[in-house]
Amino acid sequence: MNDRVGCVRYLDLWMPFEVILLFEADANRRSSSGGRSDLVMGRHMDGSIQAFCDGHVKWMPEYQVTTLRWDPSTLDKRLPDR
Image (cartoon, rainbow, N blue to C red):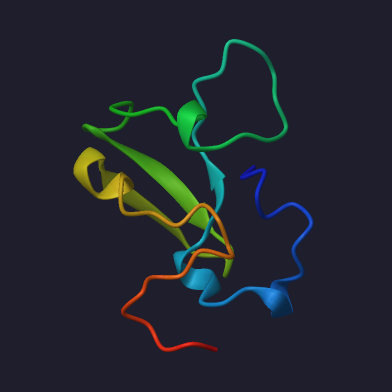
């Protein structure tokens, strides 16, 4: 689980369909939370599977994973303020 969303209420998320909730981890130990550094790549046809805070799940190629939002308080500057 994305450790940055663990204590955030769903109603407080801006654009939850862009924020990572669950992801495939490549950790050496069992872990209930983590972040970008724990992400595993290339397991499924050179991509990985992500679950977002709105509930949808998506396979993404490795080059798109760098564009994911991990911090629910970080917004794309092109978006209007809430």
